[in-house]
Length: 112
Image 1 (spheres, rainbow, N blue to C red):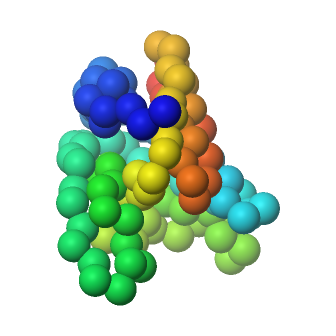
Image 2 (image 1 turned 120 degrees about the vertical axis):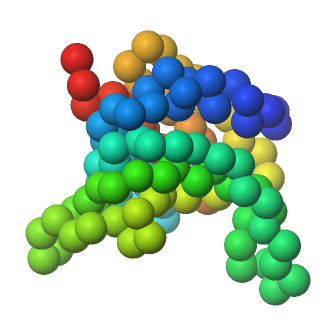
């Protein structure tokens, strides 16, 4: 069932200025990063070639991504979650689970 992004935007609003840990699972790969959430916005992409999702959540802030070489800075000081096709979410006070057609995300407050 398609959900409006407002349901998860409120979760991020409650966690603004906090450090978040993001686990992204896509095609059998697991990526882990952290970000100090400064702002969030819904962005619309107009991509004739279909490479970008029509809509995405852009988490803005400084952070790191774990790589084989160690921790590296997040590119562009942000993290984008594509909202393609059908997606769903579930949240409690500390954790947000978001599943899209491309992957699944577990976003957790790294603060008390």
